[in-house]
Length: 261
Image 1 (cartoon, rainbow, N blue to C red):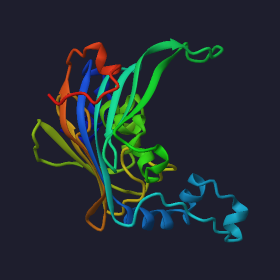
Image 2 (image 1 turned 135 degrees about the vertical axis):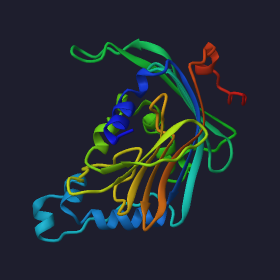
Image 3 (image 1 turned 135 degrees about the horizontal axis):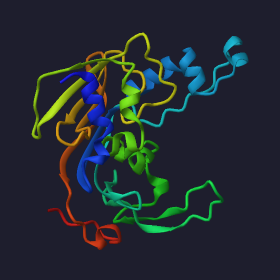
Image 4 (image 1 turned 45 degrees about the horizontal axis):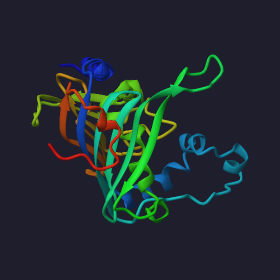
């Protein structure tokens, strides 16, 4: 399989299943994120991404750089259900114990004037055995971002990841995991110039990006990792996945964590 074929497979992922249920694990290295952010903000691409004016750049005016991550390892576990844009659910383990639930269980007229969207989701959130959101560490905002969580599963439907990967020098490796999969590795080349974080990958990897492992049947991303000096500093991995199940309605309405299957 050639890289272009893999990109087409990724681009068609959301057309290859009706529903998906998955468990995901994110692991990051806060020290590496801070190092990369400090380096990139001083580049031309970084100045564009962070909105630094030519005057600020020419006069070397340095803004304080916000670092939400801790100095060492951090991460989270979550489970996700997706039937359509109006029926989805996320359960994320809270750092201090408990579960944060985000869900949409229907649709309602948006009230937006043409050409706005005719409908919007019936979105709700709930915490079970957890403290106040104000007590969460700053980096946990990303864990509660349902768009970010579903990037790997919906691929081009949300983020256009196959387009974002094209500037990398891509190779297909021969390696398999639990499901039949196609490992795809990319190295930043001359055309590489992202102007924002290319979720679910992370901006600034010097070594390589590992879009591991593209599910050979469905096209979803089973693992996405960004590396610095040979080590992952940002990795999202699907640890369990099931397709085309019929979800009962309470999957999107229950205020309690759903039982494990």
